[in-house]
Image 1 (tube, one colour):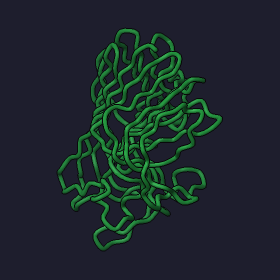
Image 2 (cartoon, rainbow, N blue to C red):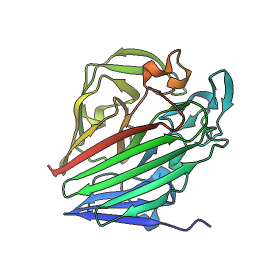
Image 3 (cartoon, rainbow, N blue to C red):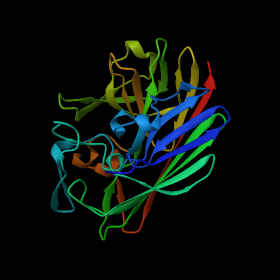
Image 4 (spheres, one colour):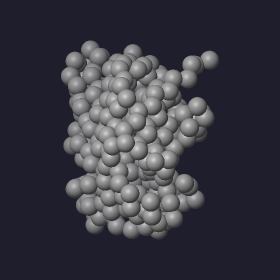
Length: 284
């Protein structure tokens, strides 16, 4: 059996709990006992899927039909999400991470991937989490340890706690429409998002994100910023969460005619790709 590995950070009235053995996932983030993200006591968390958030690497969202062609060679990826025809969210969210260092307010987690049926190329991934009295900063760095150029995408998948008056404001320009399986098909204009989460029905990737995402409800006011240029927004009905995910590329970009033009990084051997995300947290 895998040994549970819990890390907790504290700053002011913020508390962050991590499970490094469950994909380095955030078990919970609380402000004075109030959940900021979907939050579970770390000892009770069974899988990263039920967590408050996790890293997306080495790709975001869907990789179409678990196969791709890269530099003249065909590759496959293994099923990793129920009976979905695609593989989802990369590999890091389903693998144990190691704790590289920690203090009362910071932790650094490490995941080394040797190349396997889920992703054929070797890489090393580090995440540094910094908790302040009114913010959480996440920093990612992926280094290519394969002998060839590797296609790489990064992102985060936070699950925000949904309340009766949860509201979302984002300035952006375009939305990717999807087919029935969730793969993007065409880009259409999207003049921003500004509305109650209860009235939104998104499971899309968005372009042209400008400024900060603002998330508000009757308890909290949040401000989300990132170095990554795309967003995936997921607002499922009947759930106690919604997702606003900073990502580096359009979903399934590896199958597009010009993956780099849609955000996928072509990372040379030994090179690194760095990203950050910041969540500022205040009372309503």
